[in-house]
Image 1 (tube, rainbow, N blue to C red):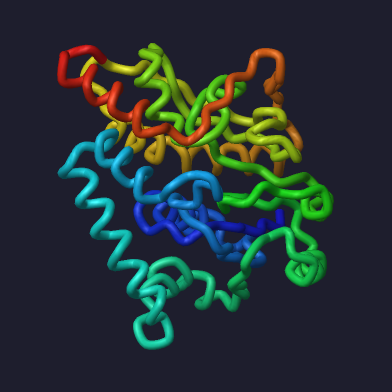
Image 2: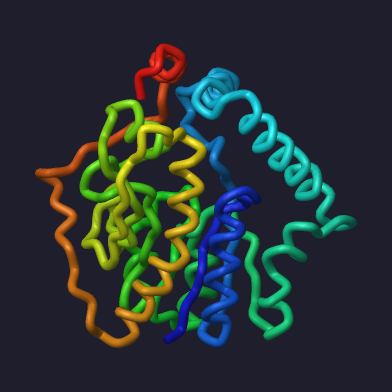
Length: 263
C-alpha cells in the first residue's frame, strides 16, 4: 500500500506519532509533506496571547513551561533550519535514508502540491495538518484521506478535545481514526480505541494516553484498509457535538473547579 503523510511542525505530540508510523511502515511511505501551521493556529478572530494564558490555566504551570520551552526552541531551530536542521534530523532521517521525498508546503490544498501528489499515486493519505482538506485533495488517494482525532467521534469534534472531556466531566474518551470529508472531523470511523477517564486524570494525562494509543490505532487502521476488511462505524452528524477553541473564561472555570476538587 502506498502511503503519503501530511503533517504540521509540532515537536511535542505530532512528531513522535508520525515517527512511529514511519518506523513501522517505512517500506510503504511514498512521501511526506510538512504544511504551515501549528497548534497555535486558532483563527483570525482569536487572540493568540489570550489563548496562551488559557493554555496556562488548562495545562498548569509546570507542563505549560515544558511545552512552551520545547516549542520555542523548535521554532528557533525551524527559523535557522538552514544551519541547524533539527526538525529534519528528527523526523526525516528515515525518509532521507530510503530516498523518500519531503515537501515543504503552505497548504495541502495548493494546486502545485496536488499535481506532485497525483504523480506519486498514493493509496491512502494520513493528514495531521491544521488545514481543512478540500475535495480536490480528497479525490487523489485510491482509498481516501484518514485522520487521527483525540476523542470518541461523533462526540467532541473540533479542537482541544481532552480539555472538553474534563470540562464536561465525561466518563470515557479515546482516539478515533476516521476518513476525512469536507466537514470538520466527519467521515466514517475505521478504528476507535476507548478508555475510562479516572478521577486523577488531568488534561496532560489524557493527552499522553491518547498519543500512546494513537500510533497503534493508526497502524491498525492501515492494516485493515490494506486487507480491504474495515468494519466502519458511522460518524453520524445527528449524534455529533462540536468544540471550538476554549475561551479564557472556559479555562478559568476549568482551573477553578480543579482547585475546588471537582473533576
